[in-house]
Length: 147
Length: 147
Image 1 (tube, rainbow over the protein chains, first blue to last red):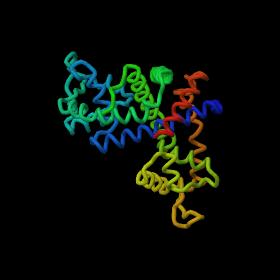
Image 2: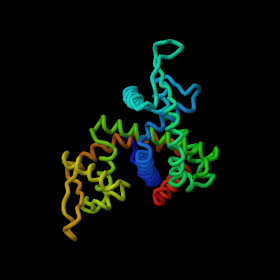
Image 3: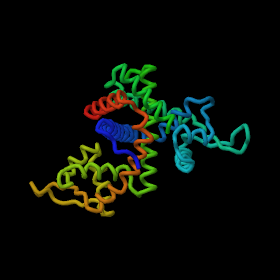
Image 4: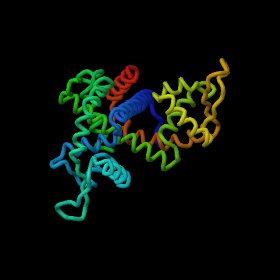
């Protein structure tokens, strides 16, 4: 049984969970309204756009996104239908599968990025000073590694 | 057109968005697996459990949750079907509607809370020192007010 949260912990948790949840909702709603993409689509495309040849093994992609295998399969199949990614056998062993960002996917990411970035600035980044940016970066990197 | 993010801003944003998204996914998956509740259900019940008589006008509840009216209506109707909340006319003006937490809802919240709290501790709170708790509380309170 976990210890109850102290007042300071409670304050921190509630501020974080409510605010980050509202922010995710806003980003998702705006992205869908302007581009038809979900945040999951967007994250998959960002990750693939940053790796060599824009491709990654499904297992590695699931790790990066912290998705279960079944959640990732569902997500990627949906993106394949919309032409944003394709699946191919891994060149090294021929057994595993890779997800590859298509030219259409890359173009849609490039088209979606500026408006998404504006919202990120307006609703988050522009409210933080240099010290706060550092603390947030450090804390969430630590949490991610522990998770 | 928004300024591109600096390196420090980019580092902060990516750490936050990826880590908080993974955390929400984990909390949602664990909550669903152990209780059948979604994070939205849970948040609605927490908010209602903390107000007098466990009831709130729909508009005020939407504000607190940063939900659009249509999203809230969908959410509340789903919870009404499961007996977690009920809807009633506002006593003051008889026109607006309120959402009221039922005894079943309160009992399910109480049953769900300990395991949820353990995950919150393990995956977030226990990694932060006192100074970090303060910065996170301050930053996300500020973001929430600006949103």
